[in-house]
Length: 323
Image 1 (cartoon, helix red, strand yellow):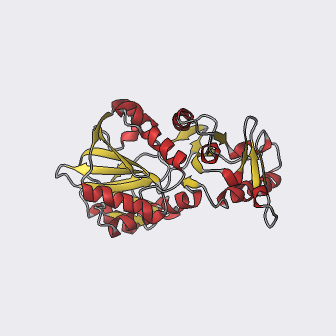
Image 2 (cartoon, one colour; image 1 turned 30 degrees about the vertical axis):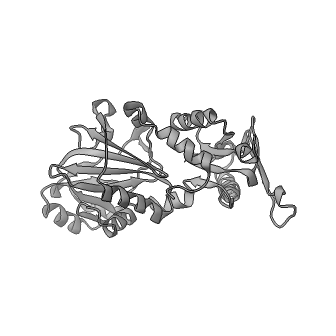
Image 3 (cartoon, one colour; image 1 turned 60 degrees about the vertical axis):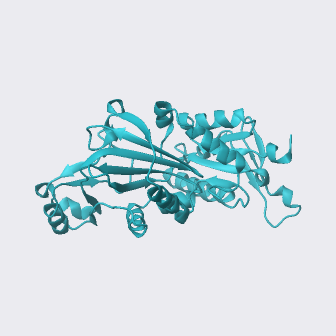
């Protein structure tokens, strides 16, 4: 086995992640060493050590899990999938905040400082691309069709915007898990009328968007130089409400659109991302949003497209993406 083949891939994710399992299975088929870990395990089975300003350079650092031991300078790529950070519930609130900060800036800092691996995707790049206003502005600059959108905490502005369009929906600016009376609350895209807008809008910025009278939705997954486009048929305004009501088919995107989406990722320094588009009855593709670390496993299961293999190829290569 060559030195390159011995270099491991780090997979950072939570304990139960079927999508990560699919990629790891593909890496195992390629005999690529994998070290799976979750930052939340720092107190229980995860150890990291790193040295700086010390020679020889090979002493740069190590990561240990209950079953793996890796030299950090030999890591070929990092799949930053769905990691969670420790909350230290056994500590007092102040101690827990302190411990959480030390972990994020210690463990996170060591990993972010790695010079050689390919990141899919680097968390800094994911975070930058996760702002919807930034996405919409960038999509416009690339010439993509963007529905009329208002982001405001001014009720008067919001009511005027809703009144000026035939139909308007409200969406959250970021999906955030929370509970109400102990029950999880999920925020879907919902149509809104001017009468429903009151002074509560002042509390935080809200996103209002002209509704696209769509014929169907499209989810596009880009992995390096691979582009996977899936047509999603449903009668739902927000297809995420009921996956059992969806029908899927593989499609090819118009070449200029595909090129624009690849450029979109390149601008943010991403090597992978999931785009949501809506196609109207005239055939126009409307940009809705990018999820830089979106789910895709269910699409492979329903279409047979080799998405996990594309991720495994990219991580095993550890080098260029669309070159």
